[in-house]
Length: 204
Image (tube, rainbow, N blue to C red; front, side, top):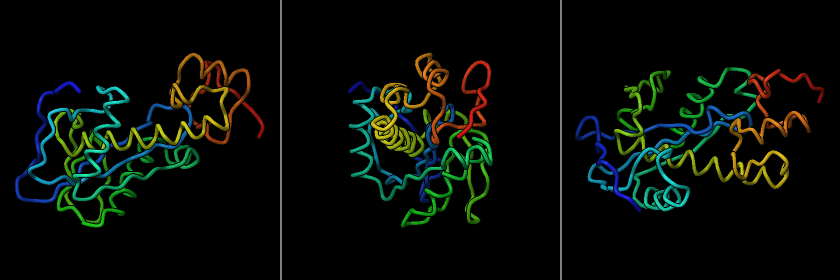
């Protein structure tokens, strides 16, 4: 596994900080997943990085390291129906809140990847643009969210193989869009997204 630029262990020393990130915001199908991770202050892993910069094998290896060493972690999601109801941004935040609720140790501060968040349980938070490339806890959350979501889409692929979700994981690839145009959509597609170049109107 290649070494990456070392990430920051914390924003402020001496407090429990939970890193939060999501996976699947740009997909046409499937839930959006989010993870919350609290790492020990002395956690060190040179290979840790934004999940998008890692191979699938590297993400899986790092997932094991994170799960074995985190003080606590949780992964949650929001369904395609919830995404259509509240939009992808706030569904992503909702999934982060669900993950934070499941942490058996409440954090003293929350580090969030991106620039938008809604306050959670009177706990202070800091939004960090490209935070998954800056802080260990956010990078760890990005890896868990990505690997859990990829596993979920692989399972859906067994039921809906024509869309190629084992490869595109629901993202708007040419193969995925062509399958939508040919076969229509599933209950797992996000109706509020532009699924083909000219939005489909289909009966269920």
